Length: 126
Image (tube, rainbow, N blue to C red; front, top):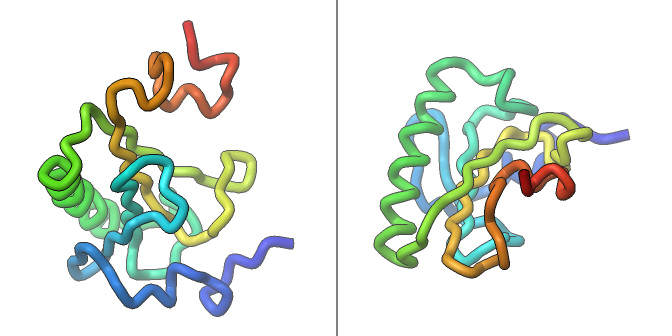
């Protein structure tokens, strides 16, 4: 059975952040999809995006824009994917809400068409 409580949460013990505000913080992903992959999380332990308050969602959104600016300055990506996995069936493995900001680079895959639709590979290209 998956543990969803704060006592077992790796994100609740994070000490070093890239950015933060009163309700959220950002860190580099420990297992990045691409160079510069950032996670934005609420400070409060909340299992998924749909359990966040409006203020927490706004705080995360503010950090998304700040993180995007950092990535543009440091890595000059050609695009971005923003993703949130909500629930085990959607691929969520750590049950503390986290938003992925993934910088994308020209030719990082053969054909990027479909973007986040690639979570189901045969549905990506249409």
